[in-house]
Amino acid sequence: MSGIFTKSMARNIFYGGTVFFFLLFLALTFDTERELPNRDNRAAITPQVAAGKHIWETRNCLGCHTLLGEGAYFAPELGNVYTRRGPDFIKAWMQAQPTGAPGRRQMPQFHLTDEELDQLVAFFKYTAEINTANWPPNIEG
Amino acid sequence: MQYKSQAVAMPYFIAAIGLFVGQIIFGLIMGLQYVVGDFLFPEIPFNVARMVHTNLLIVWLLFGFMGAAYYLVPEETETELFSPKLGLAMFWIFLVAGAATILGYLLVPYSTLASMTGNDILATMGREFLEQPLLTKIGIVIVALAFLFNITMTVLKGRKTVISIVLLMGLWGLAIFFLFSFYNPVNLVRDKFYWWWVVHLWVEGVWELIMAALLAFVLIKVTGVDREVIEKWLYVIITLALVTGIIGTGHHYFWIGTPEYWQWWGSIFSALEPIPFFAMTVFAFNMVNRRRREHPNRAAVLWALGTGVMAFLGAGVWGFLHTLAPVNYYTHGSQITAAHGHMAFYGAYVMVVLTVISYAMPILRGRAANGTKAQVVEMWAFWLMTIAMVFITLFLTAAGILQVWLQRVSDTPMSFMATQDQLTLFYWMREWAGVVFFIGLLTYLASFFIKGDAKDVKA
Image (cartoon, rainbow over all chains, first blue to last red):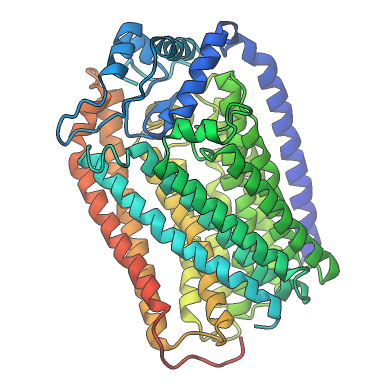
């Protein structure tokens, strides 16, 4: 911070650096968008999956669970729940909530119809088949 | 107070502190639900409490940023606010919209709230931190635009200092990146990819500009160090922040279906993200050591130093702890993340807002600084909250290490819930640390009501 390094030099480095790295970020984003069709399982997105995602969002599932590791850390990871538990278990589980076991964490009853449960399961199946670079480390999530 | 219109900041600061109290109460509820799972169920399920906890945090920090801008910009630009009336009107709109949203979370089932507020027309809800109904999101945009118009017009008609320009860039960035909250593709990978353009580019991008500008402003005021020196530091800090932070977004792109080269980009650049926070710490201590005056508001100086240190620890060190891809493979979405989140938000953003409030509030109330007694109580609050937050973070880190080991590293991995049962001791200790934090917060509130020998030295 001596006299040689002036404020206007600092300013120019700031603007130059920010623009450069933002453009680099955009370039990486562009490349990511090109690569994604090979990884994001988009071929599996059906209207049923879309409806399932809508249910996932409007019940605020992320307020307790993680999905691909993002969300709240109060309840199990669900990105791979389709693989871990399978469709029938997921549906039966949802219908059995809350357990009411004293002192245990409780999951609300969302009163989903059978069709809605199938949509949610379809969403989980789609999610489980996204290429996540082998995350999570094991089936427990 | 040099400019009458700076008074607009006062209600913003009061609302910020009020919502802060609400945030901590819901934090305590959640902390208890971690160990007494059915506490307040079904009245306030965990997901609702969490939504209230995190959304209140965001809203009160926004109140704090806006209040800080209304206070700082007239003084920096040496002119009255463009429109104090607009500033006050926006305050009430934001407060009512915020309160209505929180009440909506608490009183209406989330899916009903979604269909009542147009989520079927444009689905934006149910994503972490962006749970707000569409109407609230639109409201945030309107308030932000009106606020930015007001502040920008003020800067345009006044003196253009580096601090006000950097603050303005940060605030505009905040508004612009929030627009990505309206983009929610069905494709989950793309949804997550652009969701981070709000969340990461806020907290590890443009918010750092806001933080650095606010800190620089308070340091000029309390140390009397030459503006040229401080502004040069400011440029260096925000350069480091954006050069590391923009590509550093990549540390969120390891395991969400994005190409694997992000593991390299994300690891390398985010490993450098502690540097700007370290620079901020050095900056704060350096300026205070070179001070040319003894400002009577010693509490504000303490907050300014504290925010530098705690932001470096919380955002820098605890961020680095789990940012390298091979480490993050095991820690992603565990209690380690929660530990980092708590200390980073407290150290960087809570404390910088409290720094500004600590400096500005006495002046808004007609004195250069509070009396000694009030300041001593405020400093007690500083230490109680800060040490409590250190312990919250340490206990969550311990819980996280144990969790990662039992559930992910071990040869015989345990299920999520079986693992959680093993962490109970740490969750209880975290909750008690939370109680101490709350006591610190109450002490902080009390400091505003202590009368005594107010310091009348010109601020």
